Image (cartoon, rainbow over all chains, first blue to last red; front, side, top):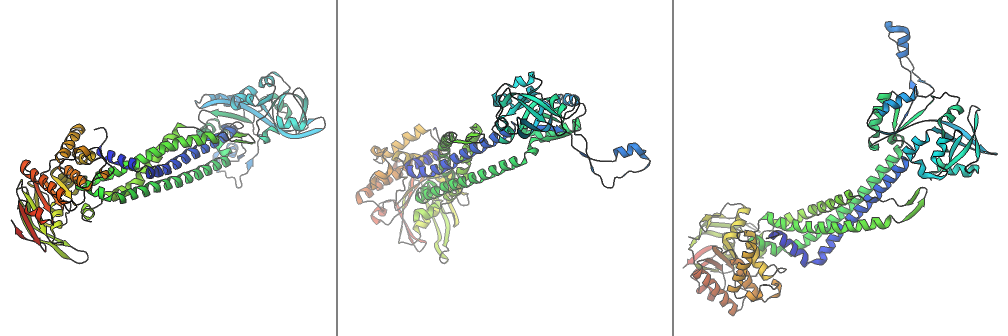
Length: 414
Length: 224
């Protein structure tokens, strides 16, 4: 005896009514293929935008924020003889720099989460080439560290990342800025800071991220160049960028870093809440659609099983007369539902995969999105199969119980 | 004593309260072939379904094959029917999507007393006894009415039940097939010592059985 008699009866019923079985299974197939497709596109999109976001901002940014004044200084000055209160506390402006940034970096390197660290200092400047001028922000960085963090090398369309590291007066500019100023690699452009200081720098490389706001304004130079533009010392650092192993844990790690270093640490999720909100909304839309489709598929199974039971009511009665107990009748029909569910789900997985593959070839070509970003994760396919089977089970349960309650006497006596 | 019914009372409540069985008591011995006769509505079928354990809504006490079945739960009763009772109805109630062989095998597969191979062997044997061995692999819906009824009898016999119950088993058969079924029943009681109780309208059929129980208005009036 390979399979139980209940399963055998269930199987025979399905085989002897191929068309109805197919219709029920196709309901599940479409549901599950939509499940796969929606999950693939939503996850693919989320990952794509996350990657795009993290190609320009770090997982955690450390900086010094203005602080609200407190009574510490007052206590130090007047001693503890009196209780000191500040009636109207204000933000105290400071020059937003790190004191001894190398010490902060050393502290961070002791933690096990950190993968990359890069310190930098930025300044708003006016770029000019000949008579053409453009506003923008110059980033003083160790370009090799930043490259590890953001993979700048892959965006270079002219020159090499290394060239900037080697030249004292080099500058790497975005493709949009290069076009607006009309410069090419090797030209010299002037950067003017807002305090009257200006520097002539030689374009050593041009990059293109396809994010317009960056390509049009952002330039990279070595750290001392910006420090000189701002008339600051060689220790003047305003930001420390940190990447960690698991970027989804950024908020917690940021809180930890803030505690260790005493500076403000901002996780990328906090800096990009609008993109997280968009992601959440996408998830909700997708889940609502999937649920709706699965419910429809479930009703399909429910309907067909109800019909089968109506047609087979005499057979159910005779099975009960010859000794099938209620739970065995239930299992006959649950088996049918599950077989429909498994068959339909497997077809759905294949169809979903096919649709996802086909859609991933659709060319979009807007901004930095070339093709529809689709993801292919085995996890989604396992979930899809489970969802299909669970839906089939619940859809089959109600009619099965109904079948088990058939009173053989009523049916046989007519 | 294979079958013992004591003081069976049963009421129908729809549309009004109505007593269908009125203090029915009787006994049947092993190997006896008993016919229950009576006019339509006299309660003979109702009595049969009470004895079949499928109808549990009655007063009184029923003992089958030496076991009291009154008050047992549905699962126990299903198992009991599977092992000890065989049913033959006016209509064959075969599962039309299955082969005749599978139809006969299903109650035995449910009982799980024999292996699949043995069950198959036994089912063939029963079909051969009933002279439909050559129809074994045909789909049940595709054989003649007389053959279907014989397959249904084979199904009733597959677990070697102590008691076979018939509700108009020959009601749909012509005289040749009726005679055939009667002979089979006779053989079962005489050769295999199985007990048969059958409800029938057919007086010719009934008068050749061992005993006729005649009912009127829910009461037994003759029992010999």
